[in-house]
Length: 347
Image (cartoon, rainbow, N blue to C red; front, side):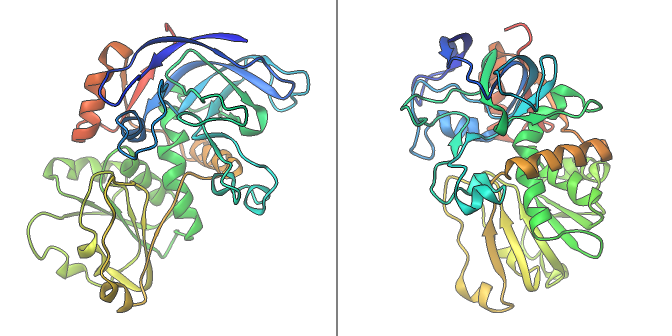
């Protein structure tokens, strides 16, 4: 067993506190990663506060993990000690269904995808995430970090990055596409960077005047302020794809009028309340409203290589565990540019 020190939440109303536990014994196909940085995802807060009603306590959050391989199992071939490695939103799946065989493990047909934290593995043990100093993961679910990427700023790519890259790729966004990004936060700023790098005409939607300059810096060809009534009228039926990156409850109906015939509105923010889409707004134009989870292992590695080629990382603010509660509060308020990352090197 591997002694591990981390921070855990013990109820929906308590703050994260120091927590010592043990990782599983290193198996033949496992890698042990000494965690250096872990991104702070809005999902961490939803899960810790039991917003989705599936919390398992004690909970060690964190699924945007990067660090250095410190030990490997006897049959590991893809990693060696000293490699920079990463772990994302899940650490296992059935590996046998069609989705898993297609490299889409996150959509495992048997519903056996194993989240990095707040889940129980096949032995009934709770999975603990990256708010800790190490993690043991099968090499099949471990990712290589390209050498030219800043390690701390790479951490959010393991969730915010792949969660926005995957739908853009799936719906074939590229040159000739007109793409809208709803919300400029942890997810939205990555979506904006990816859409721009993929060659699409990219428009940022925001309610904040203060984010206009940032949106343009990050790659927006145009910024549309969505305050007040009737803002959407001038842009009706002009978008091929809209990616909604907002995690708070909000009205999507105004955006549906912006879609061309057969165009797609995709949500990745996962608000705690259901989205409402009137049938008539969908029928007139044969519009599609869909969602997307984080991508599979193959696509996540592809995303990291894409980031390496285009020099894309997350815009981050570094933080530490003594400031975690403040960081969480700021994430909920949307007061971060644009992703917090925990420094774990001294944990």
